[in-house]
Image (tube, rainbow, N blue to C red):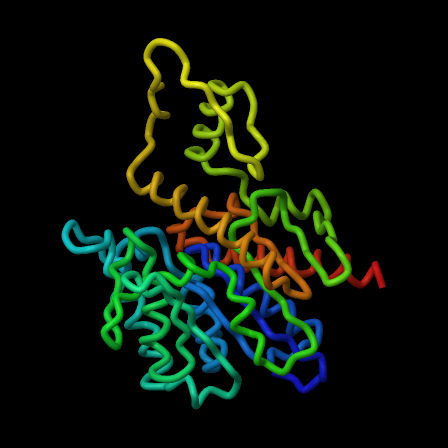
Length: 324
């Protein structure tokens, strides 16, 4: 962490495995001489941000980049009983191995982990206490990872209430607020600045290399919907439909699983909540990671997603420099 005077407050959003792109964002910011002055993170953003604040992101990254799909399944520890599909205790064991009993108030820079209190229906900010506990509460994706009880609160993924926690960075003394959203609906990335919107499409050939095309499932779902509706409607407006005569329901696409429906549902919720939050608390710079970059549970693709984060950060800041 250099003392360049270009101090950045980071708001790292939630979105499952796409959160590995946060590592690439941090790498590129540091290459450009920025100093990370403080971090607020939701879900995977809290994991990456917390490890960075503790100075333990490098060993975690080295470990994550070696994971195969089989390793990820074993680490997530699927379960057929309980309030989630996976326990993920082995992943959290790795986090605890790296940070030990570190408490947030002893970190060298301000850090906030955002979780959701499911019974009080409000977001919870962890700014004191054990770092690994705060991370575990923040990453509990509903229906996927079992929630936890901390201080009498039933806690789950912070993305339910605040997918991109810009407001949690307000008290950090910084020259620039950079937010990273993991639920972009558009192309390779869009950077929003205090002076307008900067399209950061970058080099077409480079984008093709950095971002994998839609998965077979996503492509089949989209094609299936388009064949029924004739066209994709504007996602910013409500869809006004008439129930067709005869049998009202069509068959869903082949291969659609419960996990896929949950994944699509969570992404839809994060997208809407993210737009609402960012409109109320706009950052100076927004780096948007497209949803098509990876599925929520594709944790075996760490190296690819880190590269996506680096590529889109270069594109956004390259465009910002050109507008000066």
